[in-house]
Image (tube, rainbow, N blue to C red; front, side):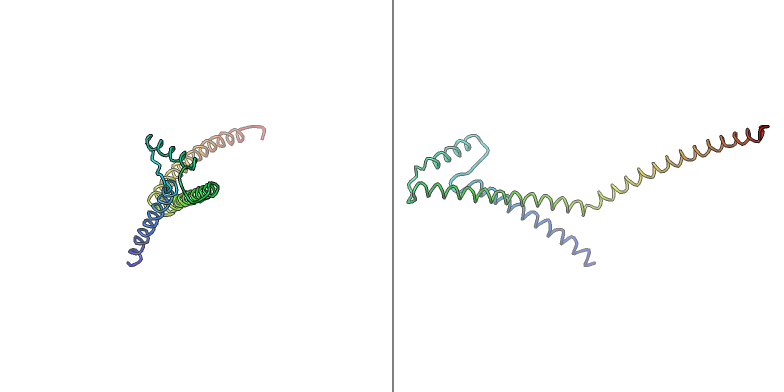
Length: 158
């Protein structure tokens, strides 16, 4: 009884961990894509604002205590780190999809049983067809053999 109860709990825990991984990876991708200074959205106006922010950052007109080369190196390093984080989150999402597929393949017993039942029915019908063809072939061969024996025994050239 306790085994049957522990199974759904472990299933729920697994599904909860999948949800958590999904949320964390998507959140990581969005945080690294949005950056600290601007956000990206899929509307046209936001794209224009996004591009203007990139141009402002590229011009380097903002006042800081860092030299221009140092600021460029820092920005480059930040872009590399963010890109690596996005790639890492993407790979983690791909691993999550693989884990979910594996879970469904291994634990989806109703569909596995249905596939086995369908294959079993298909092979039984093929077996019945083969048996019927073999019986027909046997009957034809028996009739031909009877005719040949009759011809042989009634022949004068024995």
